[in-house]
Length: 251
Image: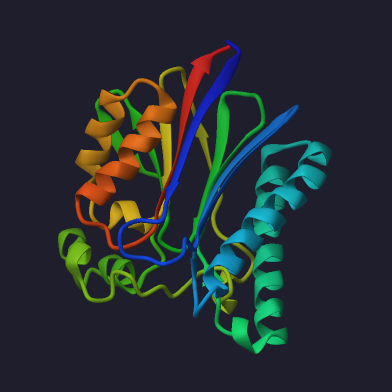
């Protein structure tokens, strides 16, 4: 069965920020679709610069290298290397310009190469969810200190939602902890699946159950993305809010 994607996207300044440090991008090439969400951090405009750089470097690298790949493992390696390249460029920019020192950004993305499989990865605390029927599954792992405490069984996942370290990241683009790149998951997708890529401006105030209900209530993907963004603002988000909604359909 041939598959296709419908994609909606939304990025909002929000009610409390003076500038939007998020960046989102959808790139559709003949045999490659890339959806990417980044949430920048740093003083003044540095966060904007870091997130924009991530959305420039990663697609550039993937467009050049993925057509050469002959196996899923090669594609995973290419995705990891693209993220490492973005990390190195962001670190270099911060080293060369004192105004950009310590800037960074999260990044999550899905990569689709025209089959029934999708590659999913991320660095930081932006997230990718898979919504299938009445279920929602977080496909990425938060690289926050609170999540590290959950994994160490020091606190519960419920406690992590309100923990003072929930927004403190130990790994992000612009940090040496990126190393050789993040884990890249390969998932099988099917018609009617939806994937939501989003920043913590959404997930910081909207529960997984609310995300699921919002997605189920909005059939059109663009309306769905807009509704998720508005839901975050209605729930009191004090951050920029960005998301991309990807729907898998029969071609």
